[in-house]
Amino acid sequence: MKKSNVTSDLAHKIRISALKMTSEGGSSHIGSVFSIADILGVLYGKFLRVFPDNPRAVARDRFVLSKGHAGAGVYAALAHSGFFDVEELATHYSNGSTLSGHISHKGVPGVEFSTGSLGHGLPVAVGMALALRNTNGNQKVVCLMSDGECGEGSNWEAFLFAGHHKLKNLIAIVDFNNLQSIKTVDETLSLRPFGEKLKSFNWDVYEVDGHDHHAMIEALSLETNERPRVLILNTIKGKGVSFMENNVLWHYRTARGEEYKAALDELSF
Image (cartoon, rainbow, N blue to C red; front, side, top):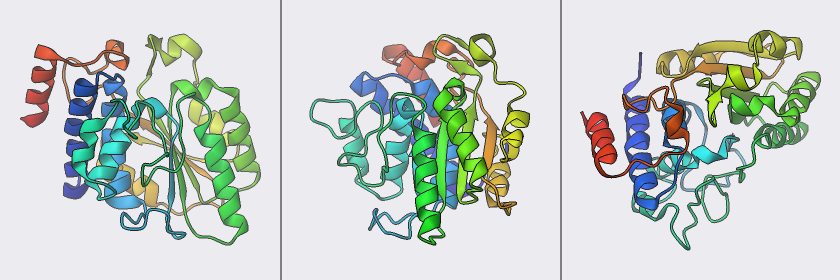
């Protein structure tokens, strides 16, 4: 697994912060957060044009987390990127906190859109991309999705619409860890051959290791063919903690007590 120092350091901070947040607040989905921690490290550490001191700057790139249940990871990425104090992460999932279990834009600088019900992020990102293109903006719109939610019909309408309108400023990223809720994606509703289907919808498709930072940076930086891009990133749910990896239990389970200590020890090694 190849990493760059800046992006790998950020991914490591995201994992440790998210573990603490979900354990102390009693929320779940830590396996989903660990699955995308490297992706978020690359996006916020290297790729996205964002302005922590002016989060609503017109020139900013837009990022939408469609798999809203992994919101703790984005909150951690934003805090460690300077959007708000890292100490605020300790309020996650507590009464009165703006840092809800599923990601919310209300009162959280750097979050563009609240998600939770799956299948909403990409349609909104498509609308953002179309609006920016119509105003001659050069901002990118990036939408990070789960593989499981690609069974939603709303996403296929959005894929079709974006390809038809040649939204080259749009990048969809699919976190393909092949686990959703209680079963594998293949058992629940197979997407294969996923890449070929998306190509037929007029998207440029790239499939790489979602834990290889250099490979992701390279794929994100490629020139477009006047079409939207989708990165199918092969990942491991629970990546970074041995007993969580590829274990669907950690879609819902909260690490506490000895499990929390063991996970923190592995991440701190």
